[in-house]
Structures are given as C-alpha cells and as structure tokens.
Length: 77
Image 1 (cartoon, rainbow, N blue to C red):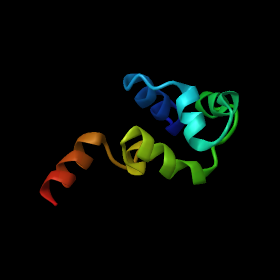
Image 2: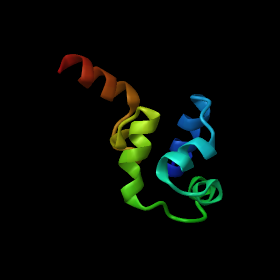
Image 3: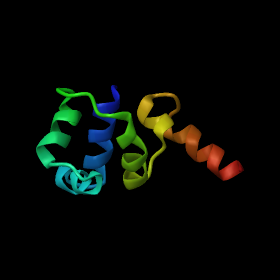
C-alpha cells in the first residue's frame, strides 16, 4: 500500500473528511484529494502535520513499520 492509500485508509477509518485535513494543512480540499488519489505528489513538509492530525507515525505511513510494532515500542519505552 502506498503512502497516499494509507493516508486515505486511516482518514476514512477515523471518519475524518478530506476537507478537515485540507483545512488543517491550509490548502484546498481539491488539492488534498489529488494527493490522496496519487495524481500529485504530496510535499514531504505536510507529512508531520498529517501524522499529528491522524495520530499515526510517519514510519507507519511510509511503510517502514506496522502500527502494531509502533504501539509495542511506545508501551515498552
């Protein structure tokens, strides 16, 4: 799963709209939708803001770790 697909999956599972994230990023909903669809490449500068808003790590979105690994690490530290 690509980063844009993960972001969309997480957003939908948390019942967050594209408009809400776009507003948080200070961009138009249509622009954000193009990132999720993979039409445009999302600037990496948006990644920390999206991670914070969705409550997930960048490692998870980028496919470097799965969410279970991140939760276990958080609990043990």
